[in-house]
Structure formats: structure tokens, C-alpha cells
Length: 338
Ligand code: FE
Image (cartoon, rainbow, N blue to C red; front, top):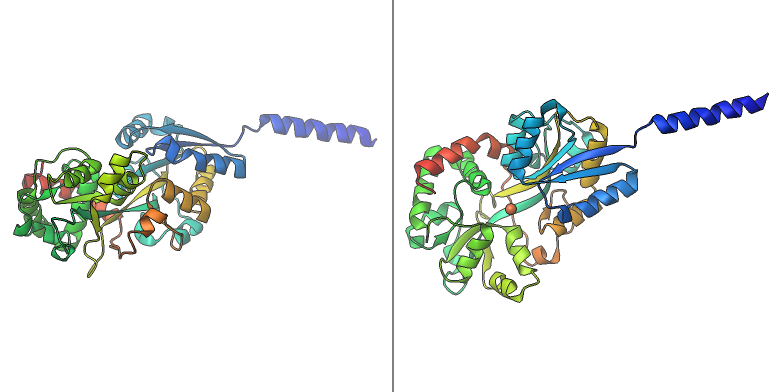
């Protein structure tokens, strides 16, 4: 009589086994595949959850999420800049995910106060300078870039760039709108040329003598310093890093980060992946691969970044950069920042 019982059990296992779809999570990532894929593969190996990765430009992914609405297959959005993460929250394409592990891992200033997104890696927006034409003693803060001594000597990219918008948003948060507009006007007067190109182009312009200072994200310089091409490495080696505002609030920072999408069908798998991305090993790999600083405290930074030393960072909650984005754009517009 035991035999039919075993058969029944076998059939049950078989049926349940077949009817369960494989566990998966769908990721929309603004990071290039090579900068994230090995980590996602590790997650799949650890958990058995298949990760389906869609990679595209940050703004295109946000538009796609908006257009897809509730039919979007995406479960997790990975993108760069708190300004963009906030934009995604405002657009209604993310949902809150309050999670004690994530809250304990990621410092409060690097995540949305309402848990719509979490920072995963940190970048600082620093001043780079030509040491043969600028003495570090002349440098101090973002505010001091407005000094007349820098007339016609600064390279910085355009005002439609989110990194500059976030920097200006941070200045509004600390100094107010009027003072920031005056600053932006002086910055325009101090530009060596009309804004052109990305952060790497500003570094190249300093190296080429077109300007003496530039404002850039740390990872661009780190990438150039570790480039395969000796000429690119030489450009990076010819400039020096200055950490602004160290005697007071600290350097302006930003994050790459992620949030669970509003209509995630695999919400728990997205949570698991997000939690995995904050683990010690994932944090170290992700930061090193992207030449960034880990978001989790106490993780070793890459050798390249160790060489630049430690620094104090602005502890403004990064969601403020999103809140003040529209004001920052208007301020730069009024100041004539192209
Ligand atoms: Fe970038």
C-alpha cells in the first residue's frame, strides 16, 4: 500500500517542479554591461535567480520605463547621479523599498529618505589643475573658483550635464539661490572657452594648456590614469587633484544607485539583488571596476584612489540634489552658462 503513496509524491514533485517558472529578475542598467555583468553572474550563481539585463543610456531608460508603465518587465533600475534617481522617483517609475539591511549598509545621506533608491557607489566632483601653472595654495573651494584670479582659466562642461546641475544644486542648498547665481555668473566669466565635451575633454584641455583648472568626476581621471594607451595615461599624470571645501563641509559627491521599479513583478528578487550589491565583495568589485568609492563604509578602495588620499565629503542628503535640480538649471540659465 506504500507504493501508490510514493508514486503520488513523485507526481506532485514533478508537477510542482514543472509549474514553477524559473526565478528571475529583470534589470534596466545605465551602466555598461562590462561594468556590472560579472557581478550579476555571481548573484545568479549564488542564488539560482536568472538576471535579464537591458543596458541603455540613462535618459533613454527612464523614458522607456515611463512609456512601458505598468507593463514594464523591469524590476530594478540601475543608473547614475542622484539627480536622475530622484527624477525616476518623481516620474513614478520606482517604488519604496524600506529594508533594514539596506538601511544599515548604505549611509542615510546616500539613499532616498523615502527608500525609493539606494546609492551603490560614490564619485566626487573635484578640481584638477596644472601643477606647473597653479599652486595648490591658490585653491580652496568651489566658491573660490569665482575669484578674479581665475579669469579665463577654467574648463567645465555645459549646464545641460546632470553632474554640473547636481553640483549647482548642492551650492544652492548650502549658500542659497542668489549667492549661487552670482557664483555661476563669475564661473562663466572665468571659463577659458565655451563649454564643450565631457569631463575627460576638460582634463585633456588642462593637460594641453587650454585652461589651468577643470571640475571633473574622480572616476574619469582614474580611468584615464589606468588606460591602456600611454598617451592617455600621460595626460592624467600631468594634472593634479585638489579636494575642495576640505576645511568646511567637504567635497561634493554623488552616487550611482538603484531602485525597485513601480510595477516590479519580481520584487523580492530585486530586493535580493539590491542587497547583494551592497555586500562587501560586491561593493569592492563594483567600486573598483568603475573607479569609484564604495558606498558601504569600511570597504577598501582601489590602489589608484588610495594614491589620492582621504578626503571629507559633503553630508548633504543626495535627494536634495534632485529636489533642487530645476532651480539649479534656472540659475545656470540666468547666469548664461551654456
Ligand atoms: Fe559619467
